[in-house]
Length: 328
Ligand SMILES: [Fe+2]
Image (cartoon, rainbow, N blue to C red; front, side):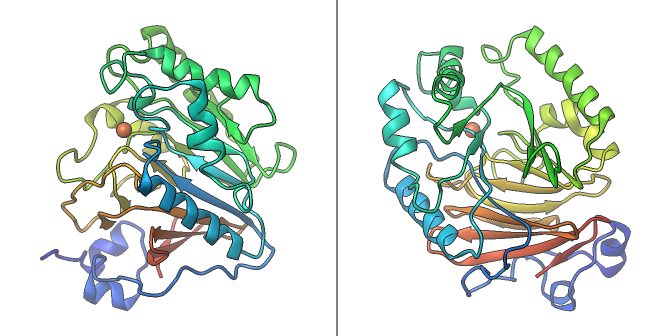
């Protein structure tokens, strides 16, 4: 049995909850209903999905549900945020066509997919002997196929939506592969300097989000919080007005709010690889399920929905520019 935050604790962390939340806790707020799709023409729509690159049945089902959901929205998607572990096992040229271009229908998913690298996108520690060449192939595919939806301009980069001239959202993509055989020491240093400069410069965009494969905080039963990610980026996440941190790696869906940290933490690792068990906590909502996230953003607020493979909205929340979070 989980103890929900007391009202005092909730107020202390700067969050505002509905009375139902305060009495029932996060875990019991299951939404049997379908996700909301009537947002009108205003704002931008994103989907986020991670840990999908198996080529198998579960990936196909989640991909089909993403397409169906996007088709119901009043406005087209701006982008899909691809959260890493894009290709499990050996990667060859044919898989870009089979497991990406054909997998995600252009019918309603015809937008750019901005991707980051997961641990399985490097190897050889994981499931291929390709090593960093596997990451290089993904960067090269983006470079050689500029008309493809596959976008990976670098291992770390920033992108602004709807465009750099009048940005509403700036998304900073980071490479969290600090393990031996992945990023080189020089790359780690270069990324660190780049991130510091990027956050110092700020942005004209109203919202700043960060994307990387690895969760900083997680209620995953085996993995839990990442000491490495906290050590590398934790101070930046406390000091800077980052509203969302999106990651995958843990094969489940989570929304956590962590004291003293600015972002809402989303783990969206339900894209197709077999799911992982959770130890739910009072920090938020989590569920062991295949699925994806939908994010709608306007000048005033962000609305996030956690959607499972069957098309149910399991959890949803709004976040205002002030940082106030309201569970819906
Ligand atoms: Fe992973």
